[in-house]
Amino acid sequence: MQNDLEGNIYLVVIMCTCGIALLVIAFVVIFSHNQKKLLKQKELAQQEALQHQKALLYATIQSQEDERKRIGQDLHDDVGGALSNLRMLLNSEARHSTAGQEQETAHHKKLIDQIIDDVRNISHNLSPPALALFGFDEALNELKHTLGSGKAEPFFSITNHAEAVTDQLPQPIALALIRVLQQLITNTVRHANAKHIGISLFVENDCLCMHYTDEGKGFALESLHNKKGMGMRNIDTRLNMIGATYTIKTATNEGFSIFIRLPNSKIG
Image (cartoon, rainbow, N blue to C red; front, side, top):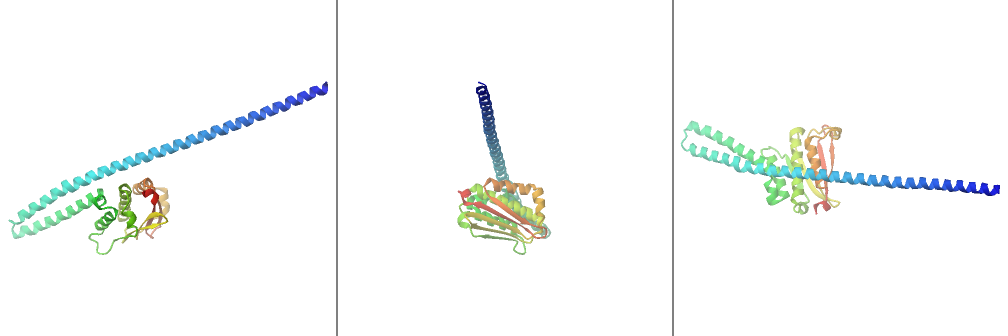
């Protein structure tokens, strides 16, 4: 009888141990499941926040483009038109001018012509008409003409071996690439003291590649990683929006280059 009691006690202990083990296992499984569920919910929330941020950035950039287009048209039509009318008025008055006044009138006309050119260039930068009318390649040439005009030596060179692709670029992607180039050129002109800017386009590994270089003073790459200026943030945002990646190479007194890759799958 005592042996039966001891056997029952052992059986109860074993059953309790198994029960506790099962409870522990169940707790671990439930805890693990809940952690995975929370992690998935967190990832979904982060993805939704990222998509919302991208949507806000897209809306902001689209709003900026609409405003650029309006201002560019107003400059070209209103200010440019008023300046042209002023020049015609000077031409009319020049017929009745004395010899001394003719020289002064010619000087004024030269100033007006320069202002008209400046207004035209500003309006084209704000809203590139060549891009909408003739496509990406013509917009590139317009950039070159605007920047290179008046230079004693070739300042801006473009080599395009990807015309078959760039001719078919959707307007939002083409505009984003033109805006990136405009920002890069602005950075070079303002800060690099460069004697030459080069742009080359080609297709490599199923990607449209764009290589921008300047022969300027460059800068320490660490400073870019530590703090991006507004210009580089704009470049980063526009390239991210179209699904492009980029690599920057620069160093003090060694110029600057950026290599941009846009997968053909993003061009669609």
